[in-house]
Length: 227
Image (cartoon, rainbow, N blue to C red; front, side):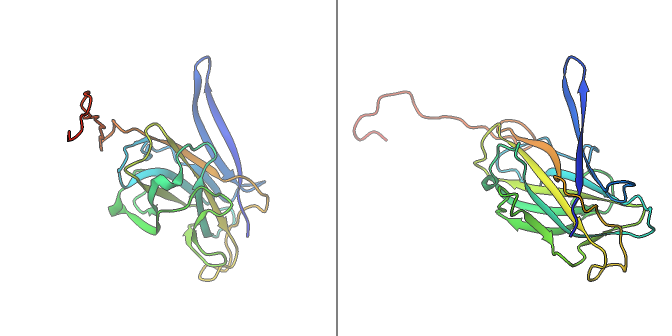
């Protein structure tokens, strides 16, 4: 099984702040397969507690087509990145979609569900949530083509305000997979970290699914028998 090599490209605005981070994974030498964090704007940067079908990650896998063969993906793995402050126990549902319309924005009518997990255990990257099976074809990336993947989550109603959620995205490919082509473009044998997604922040009082918490406790001294 072969994994990706990842580099990070950081765009810095002089005298102000870091304005963007691009995660790029590719084979060594002449890249045959590339995985990048998507920048089309499909990510929802904020989510309210209890909100469902939140796009927490979008990733593109490319095949530049140097070998005239598609890339055969066998597994895609997900876990919580070290920079995340939200425990996965606040993620009540996880779904992996592939975009068929390639508009760059998630639409269930234009996307195919590849798998889902209820109450996923994402905190251990040594044992990530994995879609697909080692040695078998999960999905093909066409020669000189690309596939856009969306990671969609449900947020628990008690998720803490201000917590951040960052996903780690990893993929494996291999030649001669069961159900796949006779040959495929594979990933480099060199080891490297997976691609990290954008940050999703929990905001309890903002966003489309607005949530307000109001303390209605009266400011009085209770007496025996008071209700």
